[in-house]
Length: 314
Image (cartoon, rainbow, N blue to C red; front, side, top):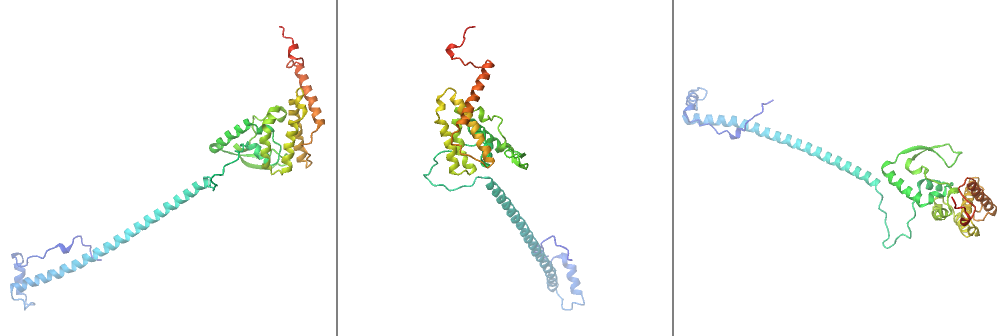
């Protein structure tokens, strides 16, 4: 392998072969018997120049070949670097595209809308526990349809965004079903603030009924069922019992008893028309309210006398 040149022979000027430095060499060339045609100083000088040009030409050719090889290597390396850069850019773009795709999947899609077409009303947010039971067509305490339950549902939704966990839960709505389900902890827990229907006031029943009726479509109830439930509440609201003393308490209890009884019958596949008023149940509710009042009188919590006849003396 030819040694690499570390200099450019093209930059080396030819020596002055007519100088005294080369006088000895010129005389030797003239005296050389093998060079019979070289008889003068001029011929000796030309011979030295030709010899130098030949040697320098060889070096120049080697150096130029060396430059071409270096250029080819540099171009190949540059191409490799460019290819590496292209691959890095392509990989970067692919990662960015994948990240953008994942980010887009987390975003709410942009759905089209008609300009000038608004919404008739904003549906009240339903408590997630109530929504799950309504979807399953199971009994839900009416408390879950009161404004305080709605406020709790909104708070749970805010918590679920950052703190949602998962838990294993058994189906609370069907005692015969022992399957376990992986569920979001913020979405299905029963509220610790829930109140049974039997403890709701008549005012609370009336405030919650609209939300309950609006939630019936979650269970895909047909119009006949929705009309039946609506008739149930309308019938109570128009019943003359409301004009009687403690009539609101009697009807609040009637509501609790009848609504629970209907769902039990529904689960047994024996539903009845809830809108048909049950005077027998109403009478039993009167008796129960009277019994509760008597208990309160015995405990000293309540008086059956009119306020103007109560003993106010110490």
